[in-house]
Every structure is written in C-alpha cells, then in structure tokens.
Length: 162
Image 1 (cartoon, rainbow, N blue to C red):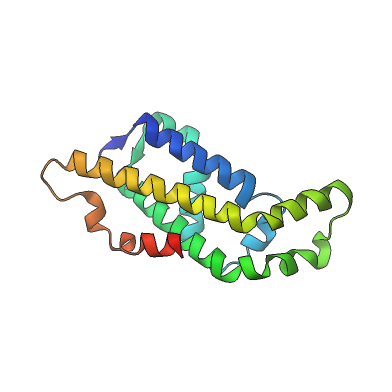
Image 2: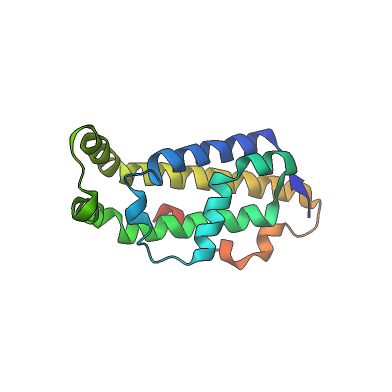
C-alpha cells in the first residue's frame, strides 16, 4: 500500500485535526461526546486521524486507512447532528460540570457554536475525501481506485451533508 505524503493533503489533515481538538472535542463538549452511541473502533479511527499527526507526518498516510478514518468522521458527524446538537445545552447544563465565571462564558460559546463548528468539521472532512479520491484516481493509473473497494464510503456524502 502506497504512502501519502502530499503536502496539500497533510495540511488539510492538520487543519481538520486542529479544528476538531479546539472546537469539537474540547474540554467543554467532550463529556457529551463520550455519551454518543458510537463503537470504540470509530473513536479510535477519529483519534488516530486527529491526534497522531506527528507519527504520520514521517511515515506517510495509507490511503485505505485514511478512507476508514474519514468514514468514521462522517458517521460521527451524522450521529452528533442527530443525537447531540438538539440536546447539547441540556446535557451539559446539569450535574457536576456546572461552570461559573470565565469557564461559563467559554462553555456557553462552545455550546452555542457547536452546530456550526460541526458543520465546518464536516466540510473539511468532505474536502479531504474529495482530494483523496482525486489523488486515488491519479495513482490508480487505469486500475480500480482504492475508494471503489470500500463499501463504507458509499454514503459519505449523505452522512456529511445531513
């Protein structure tokens, strides 16, 4: 399996990772994320894409693995839109996590902007997917591109657009 070291793709992954860590899986939202009905494998794939950039920067990314990580991100977006966006405020306002002072302002900002931040995350994931498909087609050189062999990619667009 070929390694991807394309600078544009790596920059896009870095942008995706930074956005995810700052705006999606931050200290205010993470407790609610952990309640989402997603399998551990999907969380592992998302973490691998968003947290282990240094490791991949030197090794390169494997195309099939990137596609699986994108599929996990797309499932996450769909589940978060369905199960978290409508109830985020109530999930985070009760219990031990009640914030005061400056933390309350930051938490309110994170909650108020979550839906638009999730949409931006979905847009970046989609852009990454489209760049990979383009890269994949060029690399295939007349053979069947990798993405056509992965059934989990068939509904990426629907999951990301909502």
